[in-house]
Structures are given as C-alpha cells and as structure tokens.
Length: 333
Ligand code: COA
Image 1 (cartoon, helix red, strand yellow):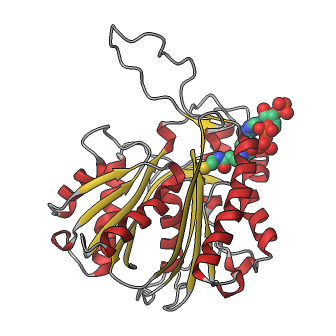
Image 2 (cartoon, rainbow, N blue to C red):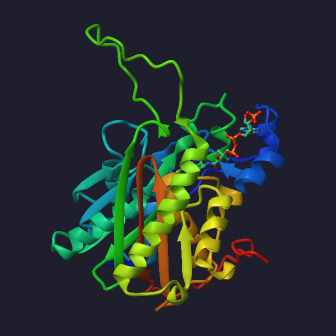
C-alpha cells in the first residue's frame, strides 16, 4: 500500500498546563519536565465523529477521491461516540460511501494495526482504496481527579487514504498481555443478575513507571525488528515518527539508536498523547510543513494498552501540498 491522502480534525479548545493548575494540584513545570507537554486539545461541544469525519473528508480531497471510491473504512479508536453503531459506519454517511466499515481497537497502537489490516485487504484484492482513521477522545476516559494521568492526554483525529502500492517495507506488531499497568473497566450496566462488577475508580488506571519501562524497551525492540525485516539500518531512515506519549520516552529512543535528532519530529508539546490519532496527526504536520519528500523512508512506532505495540518501515510517495503550513517547532532548534 501507499498513502495517497491525509487529513486531520482537531478540537478548537486548547487546554494549557496553566489552566490545569487551576483545577489540579499540579504545575506547568512538573508536567513539562516529566512529559514535554505544554498544552493539548480537548473536545467540548463537538463530538469525536465530527472530528473523524472532517479528517476523512480532507484526506479524500487530498487524494483527489470521493467517498464512492473507497472500498473499506477502518477506524482505530478506543472509545467512539457510540458503542454501536461503530464510528466507521458514521463516517461512511458523512463521506457518501456504502462500503464495509469497521472499528478496530488496539489502544494507542491502533493506527499501526489499521495500516496492517488495510494492507492485508489491498494485498488480498478485497479493496483497492481504504480510508483509515485514528480518532480518540481520551479526555472522556480520563479521571480528572487523577493528576498522574489526566494531564497526559489530548483529543484528535487523523485520517489517511491507502491505495495499492509498494510503500510498506515491513510491519511488526506484538502483544504482552497485561491488565494491571494500563486499563479501564467497561461500564457494568444494570442487569439485576450481574454481581460483583461495580468499579470504584472512574477513568483509566495506569502504573506510569511500568508503562514507561515497557514503552522504551518494546519500542526499541519493535523498531529493530521492523528495520531487520525491511533489511535496512536506522541510518537509511529519513524520518522516525514515534508515538507521542512522553518526550522522555522519545529522547530515550533517540539515544538508544543514536538517531540524528533532526530526524525525529515531535508535536507532543501541543497535542499531548492522542492515542491512535498520534501518528497520523504528526504525519499531517510534517506533510503540510513540506518536510516529506517522495522516496523518503519513514519508520513508525507505537505502543499502548494491551499491552500492544508495533513498528513499521514505509516509503513516502506524495509530493508536498501547494500551500505549506510551516511548523518550526517540530524539530529541536
Ligand atoms: N503534578 C504534580 N505532581 C504529580 C503529578 C502532576 N501532574 N502527577 C504525579 N505527581 C507526583 C506523584 O504524586 C509523586 O509524588 P510523591 O513522590 O509525593 O508520591 C511524584 O509526582 C512522582 O510520581 P511518579 O508517578 O513516580 O512520576 P513519574 O516520574 O513516573 O512520571 C509519568 C509520571 C506518568 C509522567 C510517567 O511515569 C510516564 O510518562 N509514564 C508513561 C505513561 C504513558 O506514556 N502512558 C501512555 C502509554 S500509551
């Protein structure tokens, strides 16, 4: 497969660390030094489906296609606006498609799972064009009384159109099953027959340091495996796009591979961790800043609850858009 179109949808509401100081026992200094995050976007009046639909429409326009050209809509999301109908179906309505539509859930690794699934459909001849969306509103899952977690996340959606091509050089996905270090219970419902399923703590629960250790070691392993499968060395990669979860994780990976910092863009200071939307949102910014050139090699890596993780190596095929949106804060100065 290859990426032929890209779009994004982000909430209007910016929430800075200073605003969080008003509602939590925290500080801008603590959040920035531990995570690299200065602000994030949070959904207010809009719903997630709107963001995802806007991202999808933009990706289709960028690819020069309409909804009727799409053979499969895939949405990587942890919590759509509805349990059912799935978000992918709602997007088909917005873009004017009647093709198969499904959501997949692999937490923050969802976009990579989506790429792999789309690639399988294309290779099997089941689809010629796939719309893949990563859309998350983790602000709705967070416990806003838990300063250790709610400060980390932001909302957003990124979409790509995938068509047949030789862009994907390798893909490696894996799981280390764990429901202790990062989890959230589903709602128990009110069945009179269900016993013992009420949960005291609202929102997601995380053992931050355990997740940090997993992220660093697994991200390194996944990238090494993906590079090996592509028969490439890190020095041949032009851009390394890491899941934007924590700038300290990103810095550690840079050091472990001794990667030129100018090859590892980051927007976490403005986005926070947007889960399955993280990589497509970063990709969108690089594309619109005119930083991606046809023929360049990208390495992508993500990790999240599951614990799921994965990495892939791909070639970029698209020319830069005509109008650029410079983003001089994506790379260290
Ligand atoms: N503001 C101020 N203090 C805070 C705080 C906040 N927002 N959150 C936690 N603290 C406090 C803790 O209460 C603790 O205080 P204590 O020493 O008095 O008990 C202290 O800071 C250290 O807490 P700790 O949890 O050990 O901090 P940390 O250095 O591990 O950083 C994370 C916490 C969450 C930033 C870090 O563990 C992390 O980023 N982990 C990875 C998380 C992640 O990426 N998850 C998503 C995966 S997809």
